[in-house]
Image (cartoon, rainbow, N blue to C red; front, side, top):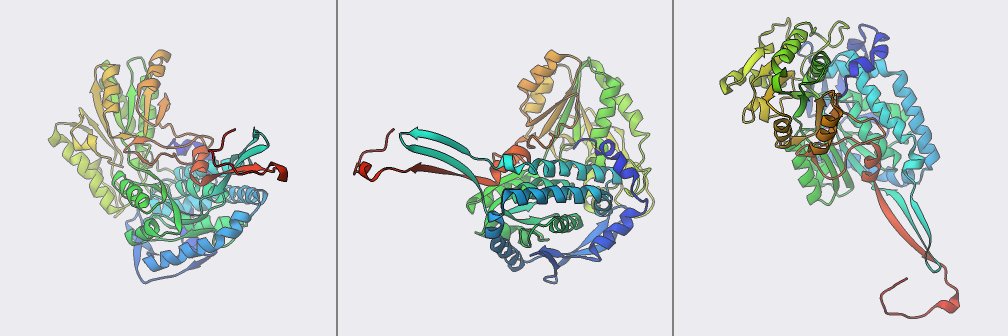
Length: 521
């Protein structure tokens, strides 16, 4: 996503320095419970550890729901649906305004919870919350978004109108890398449209979801409209197959997105499943190299590269490679890596030990594939048992190498050298992923041609991470999106509502007659 650090500096400056350690425990306790029917509740004895990535220590246990418990939560949402669907739009709007104010006022608290379980720095966590609130603000205009259409005198004495109605019970399955923003992208629109919701957050950092659900309750949302269920594949499979769930939203890796899409479709549900990414940033020979270097370092290494819109491939055109790589390497050496709760840190740890080993494996194997490791972050040493790695820069990367072909999801930037603009476009359009892309140039004609020719869902011109503002919708192409509807913004209201067409005629009794012919105007 965009460089949240800069967009949230003011909020971050207000945070107590020890907030991360204290807020998470105060907000959630030692066990992260489900939130069903307006209250926290326990369940089966299955649980999973929740780590502090900065220390590598287990700080909590999160309950893992079995299929029966998920079914109970879905039935709770189904029971709350009729009353919520009948709730006036003015009251729904008031709740949106209230929840936006609650979350904005208490952003430091929520950001500290995110940092304690995800590891990202506090300013980055606060920026995530701010971007999520953009969608809450957008949904506050639901009076406009839920409007239908009316056509008078479509035929003689016949009027036609179309309304938007909620889909029903919907499920939102969200990823670890944005434990507040992505839930706010999904649940806010679903609730505003009159649906009831089952939110299944990542079990790696689950506390933010419960916090958000309680913020909605504080804002006046009735019990049962928003329910949070923690779990693993057993919980997800119940969601995907339960007939009461009418729609599923998902963000995660491409293999899981494809599984979510196929299983949901087989069970008659509408589905939007956002998958993986391999975002390229093209730097043309006429670009401002200092500006490009600043942009790619920010976009590649922010949040330790654990962003679906992180730049992971730098495409250098012509002779800009050597001077640009030198500038990037110089900037890498000045970055500070440390606990997210430390205000001096610019990058925190990875989410798990498994993620750390996987990311380091890509760097350690790059040289054997013929690439040049310019900066080897895997050799950087850190005190303690946190899931830290250094920042890596790999040059002379080509398609066919694992470091290029696969989504790394860590602080690793690959450099692909091409001679011409045409080669850059061909490289990107041949990739299986098509989430985001950027071009850096001072030439308007090149930028316009790139925008026209590139086969990627979100394009930035001198903008490294082109995440749209809340008034537009987020989503890629190809293996980055399964389904035909993008997330949040206008398209999201289309996803969470279905259209009903009503044709009306009020004839005089004398006009009644039998006519077996096909109706015409």
